[in-house]
Length: 631
Image 1: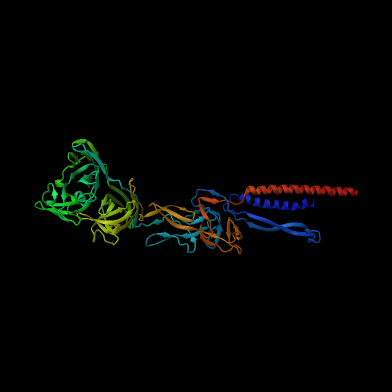
Image 2 (image 1 turned 180 degrees about the horizontal axis):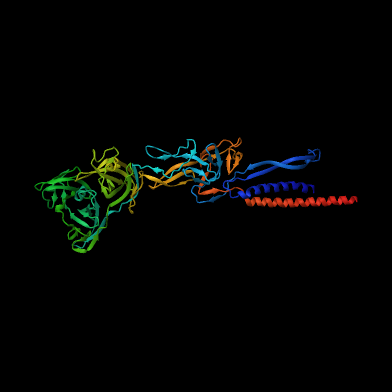
């Protein structure tokens, strides 16, 4: 009975606690950044009726018998646990997930708060909406030379100002990046066809296409819309049957074509072939490009050879006495439109219109050359230092095997407004200086990756590949008030696989003048501005403070705190570093008071009080009966 009565003191204490906490916080349940308190009590007075006794002999020890005489307030501690979050959709509202406080200033001292309902005032200063105190952090510093903004968090914190008239200065393009694929399957596709000789024997003929200097001469320009190719026909034994050329226009039709004159030869002297070694009609006098093939179809000689008086001499150390060779003289004027595979088996080549190769005496046996333009063009906007924009196009043309390159593409650049392009190699030599570059060449290895990038020159008769890397272009912008634009293009991420063309510029570092359009704050507190030129830049960064003992802060109202002698000094830094939490943009942290829990405690306290009240009533009845016994 006594235990029951004195347990009522705890019930009274709980009831008082529940009233204090719930009564204090019902109105604050939706208060932004509000932190609840924990109230603890201690015994005020007590009476010891019997002291404790230690165990002795065969008797155990006993506890002291003490009666508590009232209770008093011990501590009121701030509960600094995380509150729940509520999305607001306001871009300047911020909630802190984790430890930390926003730092505010009224010009004379700092205040600390978890209430992140922020806004911008008429001066563009970031402030707390309820108090008007200025949010502290770092303003971005702008490099006067380049216009680049950066935040120096080593500097003291201060007001953050976001002016509506902020601009991003123009910058000239100095670098660009291209990524994506160039289709390895463009140009003429190799094919084979079968023809029948006069004895009824079938012969399989395979056509392969390549580029030579003669093809570039025939085009008159390496980048011409019409593309010339040298074709070589092989029989089933992989021996060369014939060689010729074909010129395709941009629509995939034949503009012209021909079969070169082929002569069979057997060397009679080591190291040379003359007119006496060949069988067949020697071409008329003139300058020719001659190619000598061995019996396996390998090229052992390719160079200029003049014919005078029906005589010529081809000298090469690979020519061996007694071996058989094929000598091909390249001359478009004497080229025919038919060649012989075997007696009675001839193939006619197309000289105009559809690229149809057919058996001469059986036109129904034909093969139409599959051709896709080897050209691909992509573009990018580049800028001069004043922000003037230039549409720069890069045109690629696949030439395939050329010299010691297996998968080569030549490229050139041009602008929509016609500025002449200068090509600059890694040694600083340009096309308007020592080297007469007309463009660049990119070679891909067997894995489809770039293995080399060089400059190319063209003298009207020969395309020459340099030995110095080239990937930089330049052009004059003086007619628009600037000097020169020089941009290095990074091609290294490009590939060449059999698939659609997708090469494109993914980056260039120039920009036009931009005016601030909007801004947003990220999880690290960085204020990112969006400008009218489509670019973003950092404008500032919000600071957060942490304390060794945040519960030791002194509350001054309006969900604000100031430091106290037991809170420790404010450790100021950026969100997400040094134990500081991260920010949740567009949200606010609600009070950390749990109403459901507090109401539950209040109900339990009320029931305890009710039970204690009945104990007092019962005790009063007993005392009444005792008084009546005396009567």
